[in-house]
Length: 40
Image (tube, rainbow, N blue to C red):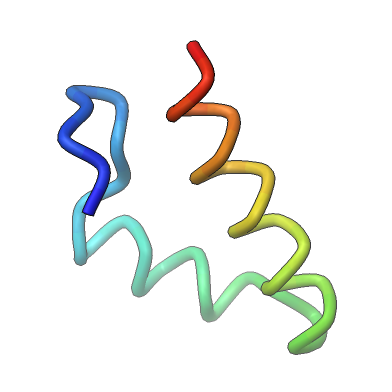
């Protein structure tokens, strides 16, 4: 897990899943969200 204060918590991620239009969009956005947090 990313030990970053900007990391998304479970409840935010749950809502994020529901907003995604497709699994590809979900995977792409999750990738950007996680790895951009790790680099900063």
